[in-house]
Picture 1 (spheres, helix red, strand yellow):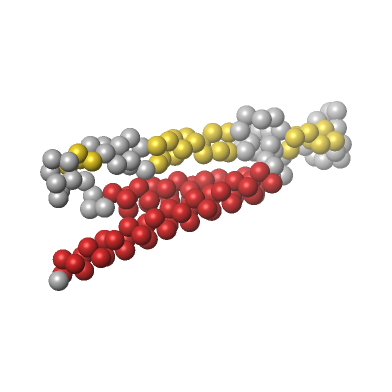
Picture 2 (tube, rainbow, N blue to C red; picture 1 turned 120 degrees about the vertical axis):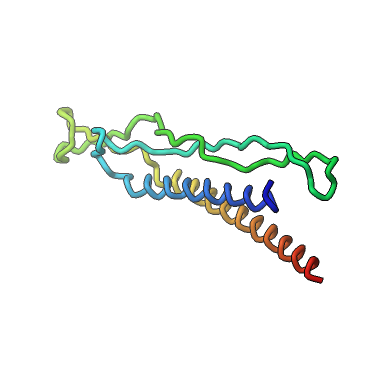
Length: 146
């Protein structure tokens, strides 16, 4: 078991939120991409988080006490938002269908901004928890030095 599991847990949260922020940035960058490598407009991508299973371990200071802390979070999958593309009537666009409508990505910049703020707050909270655990470790080492 690691020295301080809370550092690993916070690090997993930081990693997951960074990936979430990368997906949001990619969604915003492609908000008006009418072409994708697979054909058709870009599709909004969303991260699916999954809690890591807690593992039993023996607390070193009290070997009879079994601790079961949570082990953090992981990105289980990156999925495409199944909502339909936005249709905009623009017959002069090079990607316009025969009826004059263009299929734009299903990315709503306002939704992406709200998700970005939530990811930023979660990242900051994980960073604060990491800093607090780090200070606790430094304090414990200072006590051991005498």
